[in-house]
Structure formats: structure tokens, C-alpha cells
Image (tube, rainbow, N blue to C red; front, side, top):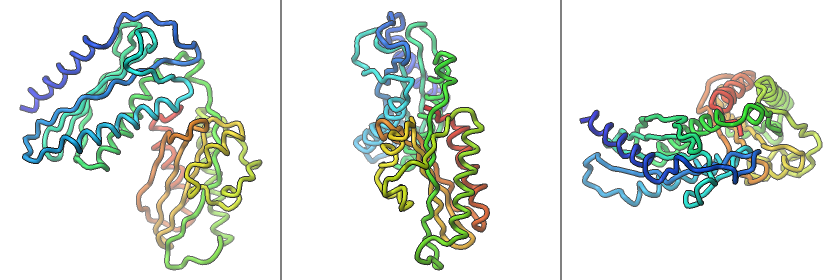
Length: 309
């Protein structure tokens, strides 16, 4: 049964490849500096046999997945998002896919990235993800987006793919919810946060993907008050004023003296759209371990995850 359903899903997506996708379209209307990308709405099929009709819920979650994927691609300076209804030739790359709910806990997602000018499938993969909750769908959306953007990067000209991105990495901030919270930032905390910021900046610079932009000239109040995490994305505009393509803010959340979490958020400086985010979950260790946790999180979620824009 599992195999037959897999075949049915594969055939459905094959139909998409053979149908609305203009595999022989002529290109040339897209600027040479950008790659035209069209992302069709994914299909959804529920073969789980559950009694409760969740059509509206599934449509809402699928719509959210599509918004995430399109926003991530649109924030990429090397790509231009083209509507699916645009004339042939506007998009060189087409992204198609579908999701099938197999059971209460298991869903499959099939995604393909196609070079329509070369009639070539650049990437095709079947994913399995567990759960049918908003959280499970959000996780699947981030994973699919990362994989699609990695496939798109492979289609870029070598010079465009290798161009480093100007990144403004602002100083990491501390959110202390421990019982020992004191007014102001202790000197030792400030020193550890400085180490975290330096460690993350060094890791990003060493990757070769990013060109670090100096944030020392930023005078906005949220920067001076170490409150960028609460300014509703204002760091993107500040980074753009500094000449950066993207902004990164990070937060250490201290739960207790031996428990903490690390989080970061990467935004496109022009649009303010979230490009990537990560959260370590609860970690054990004293404040001197913050740097190790932050560097590992950024390495795993941003660099290894291929979230370059």
C-alpha cells in the first residue's frame, strides 16, 4: 500500500511536469543578473482515512508553506520571483510539488526544481515528515525551503553563486528569565556576550559566504539599548543604511545559571523578510558555554543549511 501511494504521488507530479510547465520556453526576458523563478501552488492529497474533515486546516497550512517558500526565494538578491501565470520565458526555473497525508502521523512531500529552458530536472526529492500540526508544517516549510534554495543556487552562474553577501551581525543580546535576574547587564555577562558575537562573526567570515559589514556606526536607539530583538524587524533597515544585504541578530536566553537557549534571526535588508532563523532549544552549561552553543547553532542552521541569499 505504501509503495502504491508513492507511485500515485510520483505520477501526479509527473503530470505537472508534463502539463503546465513550459519545458521548451525561450528565455531572455529576465535580467542577466537575476534568475527568474516561478513557484506553482503545491497540491495536497489526504489519503489517511481520518473521519474528521480537515480540508480548511490543511489548506491554511499549505498556504503558509507556500508563503514561506516564496518569501525566502524572493528575498534572495540573485532571484526574481515570477508569477505562475506569467508568459512563457519569464521564468527559467519552475518549482512544483505536492503533499500527501499518509496517516495521522506521517506526511509525504514531493518537490521538483526544473530548468525550463533546458528541459532538465535539477532536483527532485520525496520528503517524509511526522505530525500534522502547525509546528510540524513550519518545520517542513523551513526544510523544503532550504533544500529548494540549495538547488536554485546550483543553477546560478559561478560568479553569482560565489559572490559574498554583505552581512551586518549585530551584538548578541541577553534575555535573562532566571530567578537571579538583576537590573542592568553584569560586567561578566557583557564580556561573555562579546565573546559570543565575536565567535559568530568569525565563523561566518571564515565560511567565505559572507562579507561582514561593520555595525559600529549604527546609532539607532534599539542598537544602543541592546533591544533589537523587540523592535519588530527594525534591524533590517539599520543594516541597509550600513550598506549590508542582510542583518543578523542573536539572543541568549538564560533560564537559570546552568540552562540557556540560543536563537538567531537573519533578514533581508531590503524587504525585511526573514531569510533564516534558528533556536537551539534548552541547553545545559554555564555562561562560558554560550559561545560554543551560538557558533554551533549558526553553523548547523545557517551555513550547513545552505541559507545563503
